[in-house]
Image (cartoon, rainbow over all chains, first blue to last red):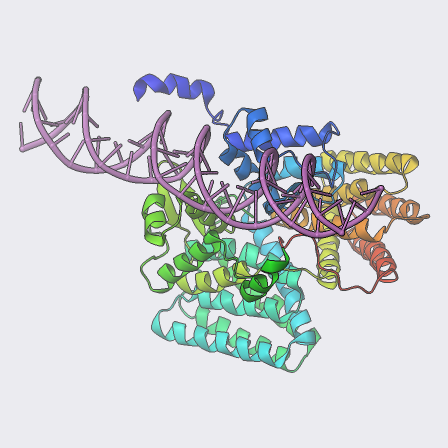
Length: 249
Length: 249
DNA sequence: CTTAGTAAATTGGTCGACCAGTTGCTGGTG
DNA sequence: CACCAGCAACTGGTCGACCAATTTACTAAG
């Protein structure tokens, strides 16, 4: 182990997973104009031979780019470049490669933004079914609090149901994406302690009322107030910048 | 081909990729309490044998869940369940599985939400470096218009730089995520035609000015106006509900 | 010359085997 | 008895081979 420490200092982060190298290579192919949007990519076998790596690594790279909507793969047919422009592709790919740490301020800030909007849309467009789901989520939340004081999951699940009720699929998806990180922070800082949970439930009840009555204006303010309460409470705990668990969005 | 059509009608969407089946199974493991947050997952070999599929499929499933922040895999060590609650996990996983089609209304609506907020934050917090990047992006946009009338990529790249200047990493990431889909729609509907591009550039210049002068209020309105222009123009083209290319967020 | 039918080639999907690094036990030694 | 070297059994990462389905190209009949 000791004998390798020097070597490690030398190479350090040069681990360079094959998949990442391939993403870079594909980026170059696109930059040089050899690969235009709509074009079919060479077969995975071609690419693996061309890049000198196994086909699995190529598949991993493709899968990753596919996640971000840059490629699109049709079974038994081929992989094509999505209908994006070259310029944007370059920018996106480089950004995607170093999509890193979140910070708490950004997370809270964005959450308020999304949630307030979601609540307003929910009040405007909720169906009867949505109300049922919201009521159920609220009940589950109350029930969980009776058993164990921290019920972060149930709390956030109520918020997710609001996003669902907004009838805005994109908003809903984005909420789904950032929720795990929010949960991570909340558990870390033990937000729901000594009476906080009860207050949260009360506010949830108010919000649900507004949604039922389709009072768009009031629900926005109620949600803003609810989140303001929580985020300011969190601030009193630790100033720590604190990086999150994984780098995903 | 014809002889299979009946069979296809029978099985239809029962393609059931192994990876998806595994995601379901893991979900059950978590539901039944056999897998608690923080626990280490059984090794990939165990899982592949247990589920009766190849290890590759297991890896695919894990990658997918990892992408959504539900699992976390440490090389040469093991895969663990992220620090999420069981309740939320259930909700998230089922939702993730059917994270499907976007619709245009949701996309535009959410975009306005994010962009206005991004512009305001950018005006408030932009650095000198940000201004430089914004100016460069604007120049590139103008230049592209002189050559070819449609310069959707450069247009959106300017918007992405605004998100970057907002100093909100989460907001920036979310913009990166929805931008490809926006581009898809714009190219599809040929938004930038006959003078639209020039108008857009003028509005971009105004927005940039406001950001330089840190005029938070005006930049919000300017961005709202800019997006309103575009989205309403798009509306005049086709009422078509239109599903997008791939189901990714 | 057109067209239907079939077979070969190519595609992505899946699999089990091998690789390198880590962990933890085990037995020998101070 | 404590401790450390060394080995063995894991881990995830990568690879090339096989599979089924699709596409394509060729051939033969009309």
